Image 1 (cartoon, rainbow, N blue to C red):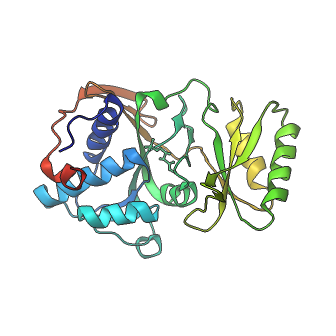
Image 2 (cartoon, rainbow, N blue to C red; image 1 turned 180 degrees about the vertical axis):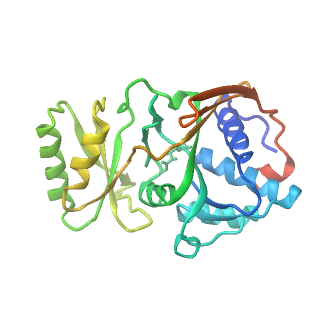
Length: 261
Ligand code: 5RP
């Protein structure tokens, strides 16, 4: 086991562990992408090994598919599964309406398709991801590589038409080359500083030719599980209008950390 996890990793871990308690045998699951979602896949693998939990997961990226294989979580494709009971995924930001910004890990397209094809979506996050106003985290927009500079100009014009000022749109790079998503597309990060009307922005962006999808997740998330560095976990359910607090014992097993020593 690694010597010591940082408070932020502990927060991610406890949120992920608590969220896996929503998983029941027989479920078809969407498996998110990112460091918090990776803890969830590890915790799921542990429940499969220790309790004989029977589930099948649809990964939202090649990274998550690889980790699921390593952790012994059976996976399939969305085309095979068709519809899912539950998706558990991280987020870069969420607000009080459970509107999310996602795509920091460049997997927003598969993440949105998978979460939308699920009866419920649970977001797992450390407390720092909660914001009063979305937009400090740059909004990722996936665009096809063909003509991406024209698409970027059209995005900028659309932002001006929405009276958004002082923004910057940057092509996401991977070293010296544009970062490629799993679908071989590019990501343009919109540094907006604030998003006042996410619904309008999402609609306008998705009407631009060349834009494949944007990282605003609206009316998709049902439950947010927020982890804290001391093991406290807050569970908020938008449908029930409820909020509960409990503690998840931070007792990472050998299995969960097996490959991390
Ligand atoms: C990937 C995502 C992730 O869920 C988001 O970036 C959060 O990642 P992390 O859990 O590592 O903070 O949207 O595209």
